[in-house]
Structures are given as C-alpha cells and as structure tokens.
Amino acid sequence: MASRSKPKPNPRPAPKEAERPVVSMVNLGCAKNLVDSERILGRLAEQGFLIAQDPAVADLCLVNTCGFIQEAREETAGVLRELSELKSGGSLKTLVALGCLVERVADAPELNRFLEHADARLGFKDFVELPRILQEIHAANEAGRYAGATRSYAEGPTQSAAKKKVPSSYNDFLVAPRMRIGSPHHAYLKISEGCNNPCKFCAIPRMRGLQVSRPIEDLVVEANALVEGGAAEISLVAQDTTSYGQDIYGKHRLADLLRAIRDGVAADVWLRLMYAYPKHLDAEMLDVLASDTRFCPYIDMPLQQISDPMLSAMGRGVTKAQTEKLLDLVAKKLPHGAIRTTFIVGFPGESEKDFAELLAFVEEGRFTHAGVFLYSTEPLTPAAKLAETVSLAEKQRRREAIMLTQREVAKKRLKERKGATIEVLVDGALEKNSGVPKGAKAAGRSQLEAFEVDGTVFLSGPGTRKLAPGTRVTAKVTRTLDYDLVAEVVR
Image (cartoon, rainbow, N blue to C red; front, side):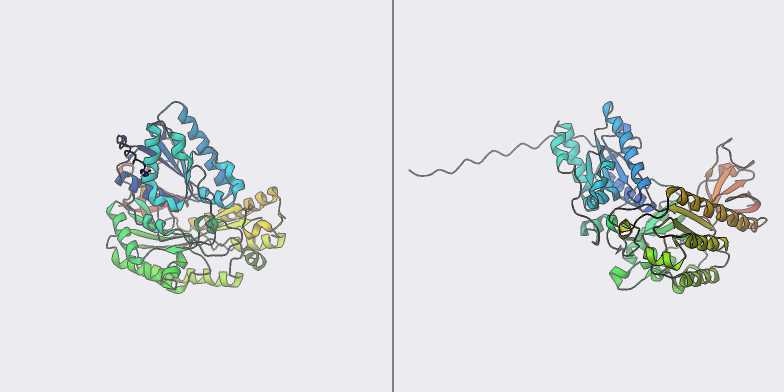
C-alpha cells in the first residue's frame, strides 16, 4: 500500500499585537551603570515602549543592579523586595534584574538570595536584545502565559564573565542612543568597559569581564551629542580610564582621546577625568589636561593603600615611592588642582604599622577629597583565600581615624580659598529652610569638585535662586566649612 505523507499543520494565526508596554527603570550603583540604564531606555523608547518614572504604573520594572560589595548587594535585594510588593495590586507584573549582580550570581551562586524577588534576570549579552525579550514577556503576560515566557530568563546567565571580554552583541549596545535620566546639565561618557587590572580584592572583572575600549571617533561623536542635549559638564568614566585603548590599539591612548575630544568638541563645557589608575597615569595624559581650561584640573585616582607590603598584597602594581613620585607630578602639572582618592582599611594582613603609615600619608595633606571603604571579602577573588585579620570594630576605628584626619586637611585647604574669586557651575536652587548655610539660595561646584561625590559651593546673592542648572557664574568665597564653600555671586 502506498504510503501517505503527513498533512502539514495550518500555521498558527498571528497573535493580536499587544498594546505598547510601559517600562520603568530603577538604576543602582555607579555612574557606569547610569550610562547603561540610559542606553537601555533609549533603545526601548526607539522601539515603541512607553517609559514611566513611577514603577507602580509600569507593566515591567527594570532594576539595573550593583554587585560591587556586600552593602550594594543588600541595597539591590531591598529594592527588589520593595518593588515586588507593587505587583499585588497594580499594573506591575514583572521585575527584571539587569547587569552586575546578575553576572555576579552566575559567577558566585551563593549570592543568589539577593535576587530572589526578581522574575527574570538578564546579563550584558542580553542588553542588545532587551526590546525583543521584554516584548515577549509582556505579550505573554497579556495572554496569561506569564510563567512560560519568563522561564527561560528566570535563572539568568549561567557562565561567569571572569577573564572574558563582554560578548560582541554588547558592543552594539554601546552605541545605542541614550535617554538621559541623570542631571540634564551633567553627563557621563563611558569610554571603555571591563577591567584587566589584577587587584586581588576586586570582583569587577568577574562581573564586567576584560577591558573593551570604544573607538575614539565614536566617543567624540557621543560627546558632541551630550553637549547638544544640554550637558555643561562631561565626566569621562570607565573601570580604568588610564588604560583606555590598550585592547583595540595595542597601547594606552587616553592622551589621544583627550586631545580628540578637546579638538572635536567646540562647546565651552567642563571636561573631567575620573577613575584614573596610578600604575597607568603618566605625564602625557596630564599635559593634555593642562592644555585647555575646559579640562578640570582634577584627578580621581583610587590608591587604596600606601605601605609597600599592602600594595603588594593587594596586587596594585605600584610601590609607595612610585605613588609619591606620581602625586608630585600631578601637583607639578596641575598646580592648584584637586586630587580625589579612596582607601581600603582592614585588608587581610594590614598591621598597625601599615595603618599608621597610611594615616601619616593622609596627614601630609596631598588630597583635596578622600573616601574610605572597609575591606569585605568578595567571593572568588584571590583575597578571598586569605584569613581576615582585622575585626570589624577595628576596621571602623581605622576608617574613622582617616576620615577625621582628612577632614582637617580639607578644612585647611578650603580656608586657603577664602576671599578668592572662583567660577561655579550651578547644580540647582536650594529649598528654603533646608538646613543649608544662611543666605544660600543655590548650590554648585567649582572645577575642583566632582558632581555628587565631592563638596558643594553654596551660592548667595540677588537672583541666585533663579539660576538655571548648568549656568556658570563668578562668585567670591565668603566662608568655608568642613568640606564646602559659601560664596556670593558677583556676576
């Protein structure tokens, strides 16, 4: 008997197009995360998604997570828990965790509990596909097939990003348009992704992977776009800005990038360099910063420690003598400039002698701004194999000692500016009765203070409250505080 072929099934009818999804974004963590969040929103808006500021009125809420240290992970877990409560009575149906902590959990599954309230988890390789993925989840929600649609995204990445470059798909994401959610007059320009430095305490390379720099010409184009969008100040950021270009050009090319931005951006905007690594910062980079008054005479350079035993144990790749020589070079190339740094106290093996050496180093008064972190063990880092030798109470004592010392340094530095006339970039008006210095009506910064991390210049004078953010004014310093200045606008 002749065989018969099986009849072909009729194609399933195309589902009715779902209404445009409403998406909200909660950004956590550093400035580099903020740039990612702005790119994500830009892509979604480009693809027809509606963007809501309030997660309670959204269909999907995206949380761009931070997994840097324990405190950041706990913040992420708390935000996800709080947002999950909105699903019981409103339109919100899905919580999507993105980014660093998602990648960190793939590397260290014991951290999984921090994401327990997320319905879906998407890593960096998924960023370029977010419009499609979120549309799929939303359509399934509308059709009552929620569980099936999210099942493939519930666990997130399964492979660690450690010692790998970000997927090539992420490179496409790096040129996506940005929907700015940060301050309109200040913008971050992320010049590279990932990090190749071997610091033994840091998990960032295990989340963000190896360094991937962006081409110089792309960054000049984006810098101009940020200016056209209203930015009066642009801060260059990366995990390590000073090693920019090594992966794509075969050598460090931060100086070339700075020159290209200087020559390719005609607008009179402030340009600020953040996240410099002491091993790579050199005279050529500093010479370019000194070549144009639009470059802020400011270096953000985390040092972490200063004693040679600790620098070696931390894998910093520099010695105390090299660090001191570099700081002298910065002071020579950028006279009257500012240096911001951070330190870590309580790293395994840090002795009283090591700490005393660090404290004496801070007392020298080299730093305009400084912050201090307590060491905490990060899973799978080389330092995680080391036994803790400094108690939490002692770490806190050491941090307090450094911060009190730096406060006196900062006060002394600021007193030297009393009576000076300075240029100030206005950040915004101050509310009445907000506990600020008497007579202050607006807040801003000089070129020696970075946005949101350093001190403030409190401004007084007629019409000051009406000054728009991004306006530059001339002011005379009338009073100094521990970390802030009070100044009167003169023009």
